[in-house]
Length: 330
Image (cartoon, rainbow, N blue to C red):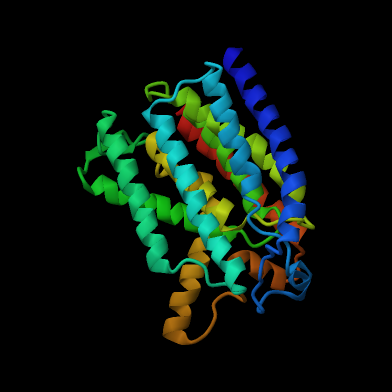
């Protein structure tokens, strides 16, 4: 009952703070003209969104950090290496995304951080992650729970950390193309990760990681009040990079890297369609899909945004239920 009370508390406080942040942030971003620039290849229905404020990720980033700090200062949680790794990943990736969004707004085009600069910053985060991970007594194991496989891969685990963080952050970023899509799928994913994290009693700080997930869920609910169709604000790279990388960090720490593929199956499909489209076009000079990421193909087939978001979120819910069965029950 104590953990359930904490879960309800962090979700409720995060929700309230996120709504308050959104109410003040949106007018401020409009005032400074921090609008999103959209691709000219998008459907006509997207043209009306030109100039919608971006950097909306702050609506769920700020409350989540505040709630965790408040819980710590009131002695409700402890700061250990595990939760510190999660929060460092969350904050650092949000900073990377913020810089990217800021440069796009300042330059009045879609050119933010260069790919090399972004990659270097991501490598730095991965190094910090791996260092803290190792000094806290963790072993560099590729651990497949369902099959009972444990492989000690040494320093190569640092490369896996980098790959997971980069791929997961980019996957959410790619998916963030329709109102409420990335936010809704992330809410489902973190709700699932919160449940799975609480089941990893062997992990130091498992309760804190679980509460972090539920705090973020509450914040995302507040964000979706502003981001659902028609969106009044977009999360931008500030939010998408932070969400994706944090999903990856929690999957690594709870030893569910492979299960993350199931939890984030929609993110995976969105990313794969982009990769397949590029490769197919390179060799055939033809397009396999009408447009990628795949949610835009659904638009071209006549589905409206709300229908696509509902379908994709339903897939996310089903996948998450399967992940909970494997991550908690089995």
